[in-house]
Amino acid sequence: MAESTITAKGQTTVPAQVREQIGAVPGTRLVWHVMRDGSVIVRAKAEFVLDPAGILKSPKGRHVPVEAMNAWR
Image (cartoon, rainbow, N blue to C red; front, top):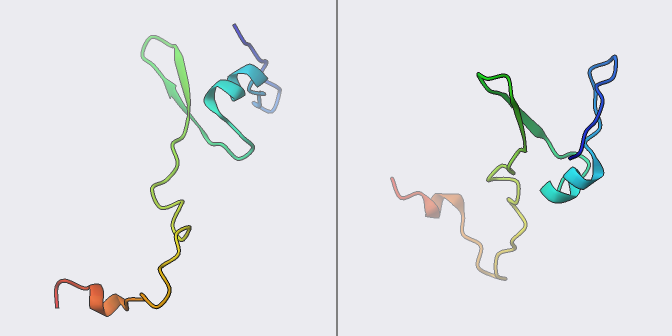
């Protein structure tokens, strides 16, 4: 079992074995859930659906203006 200590500033370090298991890297956001029984669940926040926007390039010569994509005109 991994454990860490909370500092006077309310900070803690996520143990290395936990970071490895959840694939956490610097910048990973953690979401904390306090349950009714007092237990705490911490999970790595899933990436936002638009984070990968712009990683795909359009085929050459195949640019389509936004107006041509509007189905409501």
